Length: 456
Image (cartoon, rainbow, N blue to C red; front, side, top):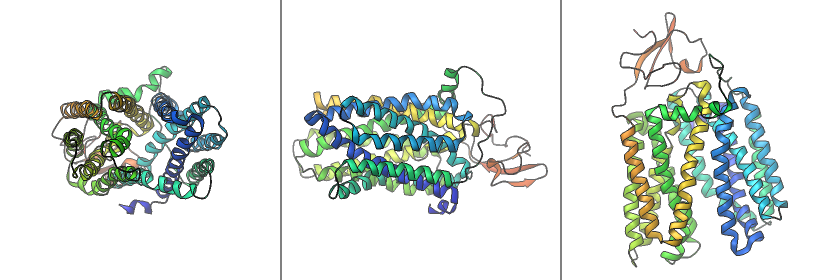
């Protein structure tokens, strides 16, 4: 997996992602402490509202970025987003009103909604070979999981030396370092569409969403995102309730439970590249979604039983299984989008995925929190488990079975150096190679068993 880090450009981009994630993790801890200073016992309400503001920024801003991404240099968009995030983080220590928190969080997350889809669209151009790109996706998944474990530990160590306001400076430093690494990386030129994008701003902003609705695999991906959001919201929102109230354990066991979720996710992320070499994406992702339902059933048993020493290890096992199942769905996601979207439309497609997936979280976060608080954990498990089951079954129905095997074919109209033919061999007047079906502008319809283009 680490072999992709030999690529100098990707190595710098991946390092930029890691340091930015670390900075974001420090900001999460500092923001919780800032909310407590401003609101005292109502800090949870402030953080809940800030989380909703974050999701709204993701849902609204990402499609807008997709509409204009093809008109902006990618490096400028990435660096500008990092500098905006650094500037906002620098302002957070000076906040003395709750409304100021909401405004700055919106600006911070709006910049993230511009950065993340653009970054995701650059990586396939840097690593055009599918095997390398799959390993990059696994590394990205590992980076997110390690951040969730490492950043709180780093924040705890720093808080023993400084006040929480200094953590925001760490966040600023992370974003500035990310911007510097992006500037130092030699990014491949974005491919220009063969025809200029036309239509209203609204039409361009919704182009990625229309792509998702047009391609069966991407329609299924939307359902899979909802299943993952149901499980993720259960873990994110109700872990502290399970550990402290239901099981009566100490505060130190809360990060241990969250760590079990991260460990399950990381384990699968390490295994996925080898698995996908032998097993179709459809099989891995759909089984991951259906596994979520099985885990919800086990969690229902833990929730309904009044006592038993097995419940704590059972909760850890359930959280690890949730993490593993979510990783089975999330890690290959970039491969589906890469196959579905022409290179010049990838930022728009990734922006649509970013927005639509966070719309799912915007639904499941309050469902997990409100049901858990008002109707009890059992009702929350039942409702979110039903959501996960329905979404998983819908994905099975939407994603056609019998995914085609790699097919050898030729491209007669692509120039030397085009990213798509990096791994191809020269044959006559074209390039010959093989891969699984792609739905992009280079192939039109899925690659049939006899090839595409000028296949012989």
